[in-house]
Image (cartoon, rainbow, N blue to C red):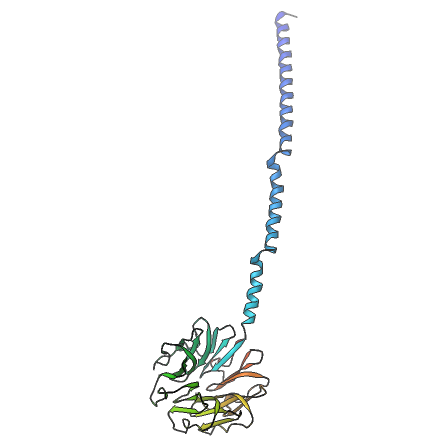
Length: 336
C-alpha cells in the first residue's frame, strides 16, 4: 500500500469516528429534550386549569345570585292579588296588593294606561281614571276635555272618577271636585265627609255623622237621598244607592232598573242601569237591567264589587278579579 493510500485510510477512519461521536451526542440530546416536558411546569398547567374550572362551576351553587330569582318570584306572588277594583264605562282598573294599578279594556284616550308607582286607591270613570298615590296625592289619566283628569294638589284619602268630572276627599275631610260642572255636580257642599261618589250628572257624599248629601242634577230624584244613618253611598247614571247602618240597601232616583233587594249588605255599587252589592255572607247580588248579563254575577265569596256601565267586576276572597257582562272592549277580561 502506498503512502497516499495509508493517509487516505487514516483520514477515513477519523471521519467515521467523528461521525459516530456526533450521532451519539445528538441522540443523548434528543433523549434529554424529549424527557424534559414530563417535569416542566408547562405540562402541569392543564391539570391546574381543570381544578380552577371545577371550582368556578361549583361557585354559583352557593352564590347569592342564584337565590335571587326564587326571592323575586316569592315577592311577585305575594303582591299578585287585588285589593281593589273599579268598573268604568268600557274599561276597568284594579289595585294589586303591592300597590300597582292595572287596567284593561278600552284605551282610546289612555284611560287604561295607568302611571307607574305605588297607589292606595283607584277609580275608573267614563274615559278617564284616577288613583291616590301612596303619599296621598291624586293622579288621573285619560280624557281631560273638561279638566276631569286635572286634580288639585294636596293630600286625599278617597277619589271617585265619573263621566266628565271627578271628586275626592281631602285629608281634613272636605270634598273637592274637578271637571265638568254643568249641573253643579262639581260644586260640593262644605263640611266633613267620610265617603264620596261621583255620578254622571250628580255626586253624593257620606257626612261624618252618617247622613247623606247629594248635589248636581236631580232629574229623576237621584240627588234627593233619604234621611237616616248610612255607612256607604254610590252614584251613577240617574240613580243612587246607600247602605243603612243596619245593613239594608236603599236606592233612590230612576227606578226602572229594579228595586233593591232585602237583606243585609256590606258593600253596594250603583251603575248606569243596574246595581250590585255584597251580602253579609260574601255572596254577590245584582239588580236592574241585565243586558249582556251585567246583573248575573258568579257564585262564590267576594270582598269587593263595582258596577260599570254595561259590566261589573268583583274581587274573590282569594284576591282574584272576576268580571261579567259586556266585553266588547275587553273590559270584562280581567287579568289573573
